[in-house]
Image (tube, rainbow, N blue to C red):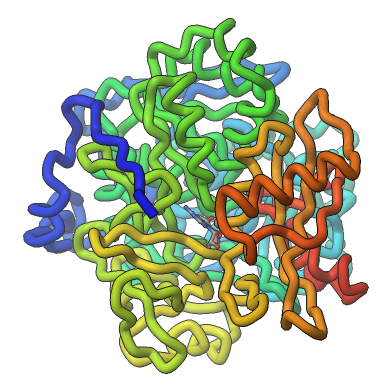
Length: 571
Ligand code: 6R9
Protein backbone atom coordinates (compact mmCIF):
# COMPACT_ATOMS: atom_id res chain seq x y z
CA UNK A 1 0.00 0.00 0.00
CA UNK A 2 1.36 3.38 -0.92
CA UNK A 3 1.46 5.66 2.09
CA UNK A 4 0.83 9.31 1.61
CA UNK A 5 3.14 11.90 3.22
CA UNK A 6 2.21 15.50 3.85
CA UNK A 7 5.40 17.54 3.97
CA UNK A 8 5.87 20.32 6.45
CA UNK A 9 4.88 23.77 5.21
CA UNK A 10 4.72 25.46 8.53
CA UNK A 11 7.75 27.66 8.68
CA UNK A 12 9.87 28.25 11.75
CA UNK A 13 9.22 26.14 14.81
CA UNK A 14 11.07 25.55 18.08
CA UNK A 15 12.10 22.06 17.05
CA UNK A 16 13.86 22.24 13.70
CA UNK A 17 15.34 18.79 13.24
CA UNK A 18 13.60 15.85 14.85
CA UNK A 19 16.19 13.21 14.00
CA UNK A 20 19.01 15.27 15.41
CA UNK A 21 17.08 16.01 18.60
CA UNK A 22 16.15 12.36 18.97
CA UNK A 23 19.79 11.35 18.72
CA UNK A 24 21.16 13.95 21.12
CA UNK A 25 18.54 15.14 23.54
CA UNK A 26 18.88 14.48 27.25
CA UNK A 27 16.20 15.33 29.85
CA UNK A 28 18.81 16.79 32.17
CA UNK A 29 19.05 19.75 29.76
CA UNK A 30 15.49 20.67 30.67
CA UNK A 31 16.01 20.59 34.42
CA UNK A 32 18.37 23.53 34.16
CA UNK A 33 15.50 25.74 32.99
CA UNK A 34 13.69 25.49 36.30
CA UNK A 35 14.29 27.58 39.36
CA UNK A 36 14.56 24.45 41.46
CA UNK A 37 17.66 23.45 39.59
CA UNK A 38 19.41 26.19 41.55
CA UNK A 39 17.44 26.26 44.77
CA UNK A 40 16.74 22.55 45.16
CA UNK A 41 13.18 23.54 46.11
CA UNK A 42 10.31 22.51 43.94
CA UNK A 43 6.62 23.16 43.55
CA UNK A 44 4.65 23.05 40.29
CA UNK A 45 2.61 26.09 41.31
CA UNK A 46 5.76 28.14 41.74
CA UNK A 47 7.19 27.14 38.38
CA UNK A 48 3.91 27.62 36.49
CA UNK A 49 2.86 30.93 38.10
CA UNK A 50 5.02 32.66 40.71
CA UNK A 51 8.31 32.35 38.86
CA UNK A 52 6.97 34.55 36.04
CA UNK A 53 6.45 37.42 38.47
CA UNK A 54 10.19 37.99 38.52
CA UNK A 55 10.16 38.57 34.76
CA UNK A 56 8.35 40.74 32.25
CA UNK A 57 5.65 38.08 32.10
CA UNK A 58 4.40 39.40 35.44
CA UNK A 59 1.59 41.45 33.90
CA UNK A 60 1.10 39.27 30.86
CA UNK A 61 -2.34 37.71 30.42
CA UNK A 62 -2.26 34.13 31.68
CA UNK A 63 -5.95 33.28 31.48
CA UNK A 64 -8.66 34.45 29.09
CA UNK A 65 -11.91 33.05 30.45
CA UNK A 66 -15.40 33.23 29.04
CA UNK A 67 -18.69 31.42 29.33
CA UNK A 68 -22.33 32.43 28.86
CA UNK A 69 -22.21 35.06 31.62
CA UNK A 70 -18.57 35.98 32.20
CA UNK A 71 -15.74 37.37 30.17
CA UNK A 72 -12.59 37.92 32.22
CA UNK A 73 -8.87 37.97 31.96
CA UNK A 74 -6.17 37.37 34.58
CA UNK A 75 -2.46 38.09 34.55
CA UNK A 76 0.16 35.77 35.99
CA UNK A 77 0.49 38.19 38.93
CA UNK A 78 -3.25 38.09 39.61
CA UNK A 79 -3.46 34.30 39.46
CA UNK A 80 -0.45 34.05 41.71
CA UNK A 81 -2.00 36.36 44.29
CA UNK A 82 -5.44 34.73 44.20
CA UNK A 83 -3.97 31.28 44.58
CA UNK A 84 -1.89 32.52 47.50
CA UNK A 85 -5.11 33.59 49.14
CA UNK A 86 -6.76 30.30 48.52
CA UNK A 87 -3.68 28.52 49.82
CA UNK A 88 -4.16 30.46 53.04
CA UNK A 89 -7.85 29.55 53.17
CA UNK A 90 -6.87 25.90 53.04
CA UNK A 91 -3.96 26.27 55.42
CA UNK A 92 -6.26 27.88 57.98
CA UNK A 93 -8.43 24.80 57.71
CA UNK A 94 -5.45 22.62 58.52
CA UNK A 95 -4.85 21.24 55.01
CA UNK A 96 -1.26 20.11 54.64
CA UNK A 97 1.21 18.46 52.32
CA UNK A 98 0.01 15.17 50.86
CA UNK A 99 -3.71 15.71 51.66
CA UNK A 100 -6.11 15.03 48.80
CA UNK A 101 -8.28 18.00 47.88
CA UNK A 102 -10.76 17.76 45.00
CA UNK A 103 -12.13 20.35 42.61
CA UNK A 104 -15.62 19.55 41.36
CA UNK A 105 -17.04 22.41 39.32
CA UNK A 106 -17.55 23.72 35.83
CA UNK A 107 -14.61 25.49 34.20
CA UNK A 108 -14.26 28.90 35.84
CA UNK A 109 -11.43 31.16 37.03
CA UNK A 110 -12.14 29.91 40.58
CA UNK A 111 -11.38 26.38 39.47
CA UNK A 112 -7.89 27.41 38.35
CA UNK A 113 -7.31 29.53 41.46
CA UNK A 114 -8.36 26.63 43.71
CA UNK A 115 -6.19 24.24 41.75
CA UNK A 116 -3.05 26.28 42.38
CA UNK A 117 -3.96 27.09 45.99
CA UNK A 118 -4.05 23.35 46.63
CA UNK A 119 -0.71 22.76 44.92
CA UNK A 120 0.93 25.63 46.80
CA UNK A 121 0.36 23.74 50.07
CA UNK A 122 1.93 20.61 48.62
CA UNK A 123 -1.49 18.95 48.77
CA UNK A 124 -2.59 16.61 45.97
CA UNK A 125 -5.28 17.96 43.65
CA UNK A 126 -8.02 15.67 42.38
CA UNK A 127 -10.01 17.11 39.43
CA UNK A 128 -13.50 15.80 38.70
CA UNK A 129 -15.79 16.27 35.71
CA UNK A 130 -18.69 18.51 36.65
CA UNK A 131 -21.04 15.95 35.08
CA UNK A 132 -20.23 13.21 37.58
CA UNK A 133 -23.21 11.96 39.52
CA UNK A 134 -23.21 10.92 43.14
CA UNK A 135 -21.86 7.38 42.74
CA UNK A 136 -18.90 8.54 40.67
CA UNK A 137 -18.07 11.30 43.16
CA UNK A 138 -18.37 8.92 46.09
CA UNK A 139 -16.06 6.28 44.53
CA UNK A 140 -13.29 8.78 43.96
CA UNK A 141 -13.49 10.63 47.28
CA UNK A 142 -13.76 7.37 49.18
CA UNK A 143 -10.83 5.70 47.45
CA UNK A 144 -8.54 8.70 47.86
CA UNK A 145 -9.77 9.56 51.39
CA UNK A 146 -10.11 13.17 50.32
CA UNK A 147 -10.25 15.72 53.15
CA UNK A 148 -11.69 18.68 51.25
CA UNK A 149 -13.56 19.56 48.07
CA UNK A 150 -14.26 22.79 46.22
CA UNK A 151 -17.58 22.85 44.43
CA UNK A 152 -20.62 24.93 43.43
CA UNK A 153 -24.18 25.06 44.85
CA UNK A 154 -25.56 23.12 41.88
CA UNK A 155 -23.16 20.23 42.38
CA UNK A 156 -23.36 20.14 46.16
CA UNK A 157 -26.23 17.60 46.31
CA UNK A 158 -24.04 15.09 44.50
CA UNK A 159 -21.46 14.98 47.29
CA UNK A 160 -22.54 12.37 49.86
CA UNK A 161 -20.78 14.13 52.75
CA UNK A 162 -22.33 11.91 55.43
CA UNK A 163 -20.94 8.75 53.81
CA UNK A 164 -17.42 10.14 53.59
CA UNK A 165 -15.80 10.13 57.04
CA UNK A 166 -12.51 11.63 55.77
CA UNK A 167 -14.15 14.60 54.07
CA UNK A 168 -13.88 17.48 56.55
CA UNK A 169 -14.34 20.61 54.45
CA UNK A 170 -16.69 21.58 51.65
CA UNK A 171 -15.96 24.94 50.06
CA UNK A 172 -18.64 26.40 47.85
CA UNK A 173 -18.03 28.86 45.03
CA UNK A 174 -20.82 31.31 44.21
CA UNK A 175 -23.15 30.48 47.08
CA UNK A 176 -25.78 32.90 48.38
CA UNK A 177 -26.43 33.61 52.07
CA UNK A 178 -28.42 30.46 52.61
CA UNK A 179 -25.34 28.27 52.64
CA UNK A 180 -25.97 25.29 54.92
CA UNK A 181 -24.21 24.53 58.14
CA UNK A 182 -20.60 23.40 57.98
CA UNK A 183 -20.14 24.69 54.46
CA UNK A 184 -17.58 27.34 53.66
CA UNK A 185 -18.19 30.22 51.29
CA UNK A 186 -15.28 30.54 48.86
CA UNK A 187 -15.83 34.27 48.39
CA UNK A 188 -16.12 35.05 52.08
CA UNK A 189 -13.05 33.01 52.97
CA UNK A 190 -11.07 34.62 50.15
CA UNK A 191 -12.01 38.12 51.27
CA UNK A 192 -10.59 37.41 54.71
CA UNK A 193 -7.44 35.64 53.55
CA UNK A 194 -3.98 37.15 53.30
CA UNK A 195 -2.28 37.22 49.92
CA UNK A 196 1.10 36.46 51.46
CA UNK A 197 1.66 32.77 51.44
CA UNK A 198 4.65 30.75 52.32
CA UNK A 199 4.63 28.13 49.63
CA UNK A 200 5.26 24.51 50.68
CA UNK A 201 8.44 23.33 49.00
CA UNK A 202 8.25 19.66 48.20
CA UNK A 203 10.35 16.92 46.74
CA UNK A 204 10.36 16.23 42.99
CA UNK A 205 8.85 12.84 43.73
CA UNK A 206 6.05 14.10 45.98
CA UNK A 207 2.45 13.59 44.84
CA UNK A 208 0.88 16.43 42.86
CA UNK A 209 -2.25 15.32 41.04
CA UNK A 210 -4.55 12.33 41.21
CA UNK A 211 -6.51 11.59 38.03
CA UNK A 212 -9.10 8.86 38.14
CA UNK A 213 -9.39 6.94 34.92
CA UNK A 214 -11.96 4.31 34.21
CA UNK A 215 -10.91 0.74 33.69
CA UNK A 216 -12.91 -1.49 31.39
CA UNK A 217 -14.11 -3.41 34.42
CA UNK A 218 -14.32 -2.56 38.08
CA UNK A 219 -13.89 0.79 39.73
CA UNK A 220 -11.87 3.68 38.33
CA UNK A 221 -8.20 3.77 39.27
CA UNK A 222 -6.41 6.74 40.80
CA UNK A 223 -3.35 7.57 38.73
CA UNK A 224 -0.86 9.57 40.78
CA UNK A 225 1.56 12.02 39.21
CA UNK A 226 4.37 13.88 40.96
CA UNK A 227 5.89 17.35 40.63
CA UNK A 228 8.73 15.94 38.52
CA UNK A 229 6.25 15.69 35.61
CA UNK A 230 6.89 19.40 34.99
CA UNK A 231 10.05 18.46 33.11
CA UNK A 232 8.00 16.76 30.44
CA UNK A 233 5.19 19.34 30.47
CA UNK A 234 7.69 22.11 29.81
CA UNK A 235 9.57 20.41 27.01
CA UNK A 236 6.64 18.85 25.13
CA UNK A 237 5.08 22.32 25.26
CA UNK A 238 8.13 23.68 23.48
CA UNK A 239 8.54 20.98 20.86
CA UNK A 240 5.08 19.52 20.29
CA UNK A 241 2.75 22.44 21.00
CA UNK A 242 5.47 24.79 19.76
CA UNK A 243 4.71 27.47 22.36
CA UNK A 244 6.18 30.85 21.52
CA UNK A 245 5.95 34.01 23.59
CA UNK A 246 3.12 35.69 21.67
CA UNK A 247 0.87 32.67 21.28
CA UNK A 248 -2.78 32.54 22.20
CA UNK A 249 -3.36 28.93 23.05
CA UNK A 250 -6.63 27.06 23.38
CA UNK A 251 -6.95 23.55 24.74
CA UNK A 252 -10.64 22.70 24.64
CA UNK A 253 -10.31 19.82 27.16
CA UNK A 254 -11.90 19.98 30.61
CA UNK A 255 -9.55 19.60 33.61
CA UNK A 256 -11.52 16.47 34.57
CA UNK A 257 -9.54 14.83 31.77
CA UNK A 258 -5.75 14.62 31.93
CA UNK A 259 -5.45 16.65 28.72
CA UNK A 260 -7.21 19.53 30.48
CA UNK A 261 -4.60 19.62 33.26
CA UNK A 262 -1.29 18.57 31.68
CA UNK A 263 -1.96 20.65 28.55
CA UNK A 264 -4.81 22.90 29.70
CA UNK A 265 -2.88 24.16 32.76
CA UNK A 266 0.68 22.99 33.38
CA UNK A 267 2.33 23.01 29.98
CA UNK A 268 1.10 26.43 28.77
CA UNK A 269 1.77 28.17 32.07
CA UNK A 270 5.17 26.59 32.62
CA UNK A 271 5.93 28.09 29.22
CA UNK A 272 4.37 31.44 30.15
CA UNK A 273 1.78 31.34 27.38
CA UNK A 274 -1.68 32.97 27.31
CA UNK A 275 -4.29 30.29 27.87
CA UNK A 276 -7.89 30.49 26.63
CA UNK A 277 -10.53 28.69 28.70
CA UNK A 278 -14.10 28.45 27.47
CA UNK A 279 -16.93 27.29 29.69
CA UNK A 280 -20.05 25.55 28.51
CA UNK A 281 -20.71 23.03 25.80
CA UNK A 282 -19.23 23.14 22.36
CA UNK A 283 -20.79 23.12 18.94
CA UNK A 284 -18.96 23.53 15.64
CA UNK A 285 -20.02 27.21 15.61
CA UNK A 286 -18.69 27.74 19.13
CA UNK A 287 -15.35 26.16 18.25
CA UNK A 288 -14.90 28.35 15.16
CA UNK A 289 -16.11 31.42 16.98
CA UNK A 290 -13.67 30.95 19.84
CA UNK A 291 -10.73 30.73 17.44
CA UNK A 292 -11.88 33.85 15.60
CA UNK A 293 -12.74 35.88 18.69
CA UNK A 294 -9.49 35.23 20.60
CA UNK A 295 -7.28 34.99 17.53
CA UNK A 296 -6.18 31.58 18.76
CA UNK A 297 -2.81 30.63 17.28
CA UNK A 298 -2.41 27.12 18.72
CA UNK A 299 -5.40 24.86 19.07
CA UNK A 300 -5.32 21.48 20.82
CA UNK A 301 -8.49 19.44 20.39
CA UNK A 302 -9.77 15.91 19.79
CA UNK A 303 -10.91 13.81 16.82
CA UNK A 304 -14.53 13.87 17.97
CA UNK A 305 -14.52 17.68 17.70
CA UNK A 306 -12.91 17.63 14.27
CA UNK A 307 -15.38 15.02 13.05
CA UNK A 308 -18.31 17.09 14.27
CA UNK A 309 -16.95 20.16 12.52
CA UNK A 310 -16.36 18.16 9.37
CA UNK A 311 -19.93 16.87 9.59
CA UNK A 312 -21.22 20.44 9.83
CA UNK A 313 -19.91 21.08 6.34
CA UNK A 314 -17.40 23.36 4.62
CA UNK A 315 -19.87 26.22 4.21
CA UNK A 316 -19.92 26.92 7.94
CA UNK A 317 -16.17 27.23 8.26
CA UNK A 318 -16.11 29.88 5.52
CA UNK A 319 -18.11 32.22 7.75
CA UNK A 320 -15.20 32.57 10.19
CA UNK A 321 -11.78 34.15 10.04
CA UNK A 322 -9.42 31.44 11.21
CA UNK A 323 -6.27 33.03 9.85
CA UNK A 324 -4.74 33.40 13.34
CA UNK A 325 -4.35 29.63 13.61
CA UNK A 326 -0.78 28.52 13.04
CA UNK A 327 -0.73 25.11 14.74
CA UNK A 328 -3.46 22.50 15.23
CA UNK A 329 -3.15 19.34 17.30
CA UNK A 330 -5.28 16.35 18.24
CA UNK A 331 -5.33 13.72 20.98
CA UNK A 332 -7.58 11.20 22.66
CA UNK A 333 -8.56 8.89 19.87
CA UNK A 334 -7.23 7.83 16.53
CA UNK A 335 -7.27 10.70 14.07
CA UNK A 336 -8.80 9.43 10.84
CA UNK A 337 -6.85 10.28 7.67
CA UNK A 338 -10.05 11.76 6.25
CA UNK A 339 -10.00 14.33 9.06
CA UNK A 340 -6.39 15.26 8.28
CA UNK A 341 -7.38 15.85 4.65
CA UNK A 342 -10.33 17.94 5.76
CA UNK A 343 -8.01 20.01 7.98
CA UNK A 344 -5.74 20.71 5.03
CA UNK A 345 -8.75 21.85 3.04
CA UNK A 346 -10.48 24.09 5.57
CA UNK A 347 -7.62 25.37 7.78
CA UNK A 348 -4.81 24.97 5.25
CA UNK A 349 -3.11 23.39 8.26
CA UNK A 350 -1.95 19.93 9.10
CA UNK A 351 -3.60 18.47 12.19
CA UNK A 352 -0.83 17.03 14.35
CA UNK A 353 -1.91 13.85 16.07
CA UNK A 354 -0.22 12.76 19.26
CA UNK A 355 -0.57 9.79 21.57
CA UNK A 356 -0.36 9.50 25.30
CA UNK A 357 -2.45 8.36 28.27
CA UNK A 358 -3.48 9.43 31.76
CA UNK A 359 -0.84 7.00 32.99
CA UNK A 360 1.97 8.51 30.89
CA UNK A 361 1.24 11.98 32.29
CA UNK A 362 2.47 13.72 29.15
CA UNK A 363 2.77 13.35 25.42
CA UNK A 364 4.82 10.34 24.28
CA UNK A 365 4.41 9.93 20.51
CA UNK A 366 3.68 12.83 18.22
CA UNK A 367 3.76 14.45 14.84
CA UNK A 368 6.11 17.45 14.94
CA UNK A 369 5.80 20.59 12.88
CA UNK A 370 9.22 20.05 11.34
CA UNK A 371 8.37 16.51 10.19
CA UNK A 372 6.32 15.04 7.32
CA UNK A 373 2.96 13.64 8.44
CA UNK A 374 1.59 10.30 7.32
CA UNK A 375 -2.18 10.70 7.79
CA UNK A 376 -3.47 8.02 10.16
CA UNK A 377 -0.16 7.71 12.02
CA UNK A 378 0.41 9.01 15.56
CA UNK A 379 3.95 10.02 14.64
CA UNK A 380 7.24 9.30 16.40
CA UNK A 381 8.41 9.10 20.02
CA UNK A 382 9.45 12.28 21.78
CA UNK A 383 13.22 12.77 22.07
CA UNK A 384 14.42 11.12 25.28
CA UNK A 385 11.68 8.50 25.07
CA UNK A 386 11.93 5.02 23.58
CA UNK A 387 8.70 3.38 22.38
CA UNK A 388 8.38 -0.05 20.82
CA UNK A 389 6.01 -2.81 19.77
CA UNK A 390 6.28 -5.94 21.90
CA UNK A 391 4.92 -9.43 21.40
CA UNK A 392 3.01 -11.13 24.22
CA UNK A 393 6.25 -12.25 25.88
CA UNK A 394 7.89 -8.83 25.99
CA UNK A 395 10.13 -9.21 22.92
CA UNK A 396 10.45 -6.29 20.51
CA UNK A 397 8.78 -6.94 17.16
CA UNK A 398 10.27 -5.91 13.80
CA UNK A 399 8.62 -3.13 11.72
CA UNK A 400 5.08 -3.55 10.42
CA UNK A 401 4.03 -6.19 12.95
CA UNK A 402 1.04 -5.48 15.14
CA UNK A 403 1.60 -5.91 18.89
CA UNK A 404 1.62 -4.24 22.31
CA UNK A 405 2.55 -0.58 22.28
CA UNK A 406 5.09 -0.15 25.09
CA UNK A 407 7.36 2.60 26.39
CA UNK A 408 10.69 2.09 28.11
CA UNK A 409 9.98 3.00 31.74
CA UNK A 410 11.46 6.10 33.31
CA UNK A 411 10.29 9.14 31.35
CA UNK A 412 9.79 12.21 33.60
CA UNK A 413 5.97 12.32 33.76
CA UNK A 414 5.35 8.61 34.21
CA UNK A 415 2.70 7.79 36.83
CA UNK A 416 4.21 6.80 40.15
CA UNK A 417 1.31 4.91 41.72
CA UNK A 418 -2.14 3.56 41.24
CA UNK A 419 -3.66 4.85 44.44
CA UNK A 420 -3.78 2.10 47.06
CA UNK A 421 -3.47 -0.55 44.37
CA UNK A 422 0.14 -1.68 43.85
CA UNK A 423 -0.97 -4.87 42.11
CA UNK A 424 -2.72 -2.85 39.40
CA UNK A 425 0.39 -0.70 39.02
CA UNK A 426 2.61 -3.75 38.58
CA UNK A 427 0.40 -5.04 35.76
CA UNK A 428 1.54 -2.15 33.55
CA UNK A 429 5.18 -3.12 34.11
CA UNK A 430 4.86 -6.87 33.65
CA UNK A 431 7.78 -6.95 31.19
CA UNK A 432 10.87 -5.76 33.07
CA UNK A 433 11.85 -2.22 32.12
CA UNK A 434 8.72 -1.59 30.02
CA UNK A 435 5.44 0.20 30.53
CA UNK A 436 2.77 -1.71 28.57
CA UNK A 437 0.02 0.59 27.39
CA UNK A 438 -2.82 -1.80 26.58
CA UNK A 439 -2.97 -0.30 23.08
CA UNK A 440 -2.26 -2.28 19.97
CA UNK A 441 -0.13 -0.67 17.24
CA UNK A 442 2.66 -1.22 14.77
CA UNK A 443 5.72 0.77 13.78
CA UNK A 444 6.57 1.20 10.12
CA UNK A 445 10.01 1.09 8.52
CA UNK A 446 10.40 4.87 8.92
CA UNK A 447 9.70 4.71 12.65
CA UNK A 448 6.13 6.07 12.51
CA UNK A 449 3.64 4.45 14.92
CA UNK A 450 0.17 3.36 13.77
CA UNK A 451 -2.62 2.81 16.27
CA UNK A 452 -4.85 -0.23 15.81
CA UNK A 453 -7.13 -0.28 18.84
CA UNK A 454 -7.09 -1.20 22.47
CA UNK A 455 -5.55 -4.66 22.74
CA UNK A 456 -8.92 -6.01 23.89
CA UNK A 457 -10.63 -4.48 20.86
CA UNK A 458 -8.53 -6.10 18.13
CA UNK A 459 -10.76 -8.33 16.03
CA UNK A 460 -9.83 -11.80 14.90
CA UNK A 461 -11.96 -12.71 11.91
CA UNK A 462 -11.30 -15.90 9.93
CA UNK A 463 -7.71 -15.87 11.17
CA UNK A 464 -7.07 -12.24 10.17
CA UNK A 465 -6.24 -9.66 12.85
CA UNK A 466 -8.13 -6.46 12.15
CA UNK A 467 -7.71 -3.23 14.11
CA UNK A 468 -11.07 -1.51 14.54
CA UNK A 469 -9.54 1.89 13.79
CA UNK A 470 -8.64 0.96 10.20
CA UNK A 471 -12.22 -0.04 9.48
CA UNK A 472 -13.65 3.02 11.25
CA UNK A 473 -11.39 5.32 9.27
CA UNK A 474 -12.50 3.79 6.00
CA UNK A 475 -16.13 4.09 7.09
CA UNK A 476 -15.88 7.81 7.86
CA UNK A 477 -14.51 8.40 4.38
CA UNK A 478 -17.94 7.48 3.09
CA UNK A 479 -19.95 10.68 2.54
CA UNK A 480 -22.94 9.42 4.57
CA UNK A 481 -20.97 8.44 7.67
CA UNK A 482 -20.39 10.90 10.52
CA UNK A 483 -18.89 8.53 13.07
CA UNK A 484 -18.33 4.81 13.34
CA UNK A 485 -17.53 2.32 16.12
CA UNK A 486 -16.41 -1.15 15.11
CA UNK A 487 -16.39 -4.30 17.26
CA UNK A 488 -15.77 -8.03 16.87
CA UNK A 489 -18.85 -10.13 17.44
CA UNK A 490 -18.32 -13.80 18.31
CA UNK A 491 -19.18 -16.10 15.41
CA UNK A 492 -19.10 -19.90 15.38
CA UNK A 493 -17.53 -20.08 11.93
CA UNK A 494 -15.24 -17.08 11.66
CA UNK A 495 -14.19 -16.66 15.27
CA UNK A 496 -15.45 -13.10 15.12
CA UNK A 497 -17.28 -11.06 12.55
CA UNK A 498 -16.99 -7.31 12.17
CA UNK A 499 -19.93 -5.26 13.27
CA UNK A 500 -20.09 -1.50 12.70
CA UNK A 501 -22.23 1.00 14.58
CA UNK A 502 -22.69 4.09 12.47
CA UNK A 503 -24.13 7.54 12.99
CA UNK A 504 -25.06 9.32 9.78
CA UNK A 505 -24.31 12.83 8.64
CA UNK A 506 -27.12 15.35 8.38
CA UNK A 507 -29.28 14.65 5.33
CA UNK A 508 -28.83 10.85 5.25
CA UNK A 509 -31.39 8.24 6.31
CA UNK A 510 -30.73 4.61 7.27
CA UNK A 511 -31.68 2.07 4.60
CA UNK A 512 -30.78 -1.41 3.36
CA UNK A 513 -29.29 0.10 0.20
CA UNK A 514 -27.07 2.45 2.16
CA UNK A 515 -25.90 -0.44 4.32
CA UNK A 516 -24.96 -2.42 1.25
CA UNK A 517 -23.25 0.56 -0.31
CA UNK A 518 -21.16 1.19 2.81
CA UNK A 519 -20.19 -2.47 3.04
CA UNK A 520 -19.07 -2.41 -0.57
CA UNK A 521 -17.14 0.80 0.04
CA UNK A 522 -15.03 -0.86 2.75
CA UNK A 523 -14.64 -4.05 0.76
CA UNK A 524 -13.26 -2.21 -2.25
CA UNK A 525 -11.34 0.44 -0.37
CA UNK A 526 -9.76 -1.68 2.34
CA UNK A 527 -10.18 -5.46 2.15
CA UNK A 528 -12.98 -7.97 1.79
CA UNK A 529 -12.29 -9.48 5.21
CA UNK A 530 -12.42 -6.01 6.82
CA UNK A 531 -15.91 -5.17 5.52
CA UNK A 532 -18.50 -5.17 8.32
CA UNK A 533 -20.89 -8.09 7.95
CA UNK A 534 -23.30 -6.31 10.23
CA UNK A 535 -24.12 -2.62 10.31
CA UNK A 536 -26.38 -0.90 12.79
CA UNK A 537 -27.36 2.75 12.46
CA UNK A 538 -27.58 4.80 15.65
CA UNK A 539 -28.37 8.46 16.23
CA UNK A 540 -25.40 8.73 18.56
CA UNK A 541 -22.51 6.52 19.61
CA UNK A 542 -21.61 6.06 23.28
CA UNK A 543 -18.66 8.28 24.12
CA UNK A 544 -16.60 9.25 27.12
CA UNK A 545 -16.53 12.83 28.31
CA UNK A 546 -13.19 13.16 26.58
CA UNK A 547 -14.83 12.13 23.31
CA UNK A 548 -13.69 8.53 22.94
CA UNK A 549 -16.07 6.11 21.30
CA UNK A 550 -16.65 3.41 23.92
CA UNK A 551 -16.29 0.19 21.95
CA UNK A 552 -16.58 -1.93 25.06
CA UNK A 553 -20.05 -0.45 25.63
CA UNK A 554 -21.06 -1.23 22.05
CA UNK A 555 -19.82 -4.76 22.58
CA UNK A 556 -21.62 -5.17 25.90
CA UNK A 557 -24.87 -3.93 24.31
CA UNK A 558 -24.43 -6.29 21.43
CA UNK A 559 -23.77 -9.30 23.63
CA UNK A 560 -26.16 -8.36 26.42
CA UNK A 561 -23.29 -8.23 28.93
CA UNK A 562 -22.73 -5.84 31.84
CA UNK A 563 -21.22 -2.55 30.64
CA UNK A 564 -18.77 -2.09 33.55
CA UNK A 565 -17.97 1.34 34.95
CA UNK A 566 -19.97 4.00 33.10
CA UNK A 567 -19.09 7.06 35.18
CA UNK A 568 -17.22 8.68 32.32
CA UNK A 569 -19.98 8.07 29.76
CA UNK A 570 -21.26 11.28 28.22
CA UNK A 571 -25.00 11.78 28.82
C1 6R9 B 1 -4.50 11.67 26.60
C2 6R9 B 1 -5.56 10.63 26.72
C3 6R9 B 1 -5.69 7.06 26.67
C4 6R9 B 1 -6.12 6.17 25.50
C5 6R9 B 1 -4.97 5.51 24.81
C6 6R9 B 1 -5.56 5.27 23.42
C7 6R9 B 1 -6.41 6.49 23.19
C8 6R9 B 1 -5.12 8.67 22.98
C9 6R9 B 1 -4.61 8.64 20.87
C10 6R9 B 1 -5.32 7.46 21.17
C11 6R9 B 1 -5.12 6.75 19.00
C12 6R9 B 1 -4.17 8.82 19.53
N1 6R9 B 1 -5.64 7.53 22.49
N2 6R9 B 1 -4.52 9.36 22.01
N3 6R9 B 1 -5.57 6.53 20.24
N4 6R9 B 1 -4.45 7.86 18.64
N5 6R9 B 1 -3.49 9.92 19.15
O1 6R9 B 1 -6.35 10.46 25.82
O2 6R9 B 1 -5.56 9.90 27.89
O3 6R9 B 1 -7.99 9.49 28.47
O4 6R9 B 1 -6.10 8.16 29.54
O5 6R9 B 1 -6.78 7.80 27.15
O6 6R9 B 1 -6.75 6.97 24.49
O7 6R9 B 1 -6.35 4.11 23.45
O8 6R9 B 1 -4.60 4.32 25.49
P1 6R9 B 1 -6.65 8.85 28.34
